[in-house]
Length: 296
Image (cartoon, rainbow, N blue to C red; front, top):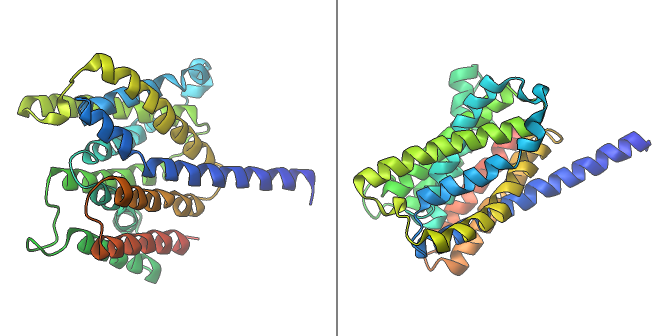
């Protein structure tokens, strides 16, 4: 094997590890969110702080004029992805952790539908199975206790909507990529800040606890620290790796978030996690695997 081939192989290995590790970290993302909520800092404000901290991180790379190439296109991508992550963050404190994570990870279903409607793709067997597994997983998670298996509360609906927006943002990012990683990170943070600000304003208007600011002096340093640990590094790692390994492998490796989220929720959340939730987790994992393997 040549030196160049060996170097390329090593980069792919490191990129794969970066994505898998980032997914696992995001699987425990709900833990600091719930802890900050207990300190009186609402989920919407945590989202604002996280995005504000993350927005600073790419600025040194944005000093070059060439780094701003394609800003308008990336801003639309960032608006979709940033709002998606904002709604996902808020959903984690408004509903059961496993519900939020798995409803968000119905993205293979929405990406399949978007490919058919917007790109004229054919409904292949693999994509049909991905949709079947995805909706089947949602049925198991939500259950029939209260009639039709529909989202039961605001958190469920936000998680579902966040997955749809994430699918739209990733599809558009795939069709209109950026040369580097700093501009996508910056526009993602801009979109997240705008989305978080809108959620804070709306939540404050209706008196929702997610807009509570509590003891900001105590909560703010911890929120900044958690952002630096759980939010900033995975953003860079995933966006860096996505330019070095194929999108199918990225999708598979990010499913570590579902596994880590299911395990941490079962161990630490105190929320029910029985056979129905386990079956839903397995089906949505199957949906993700079938979807990304079918696109190879």
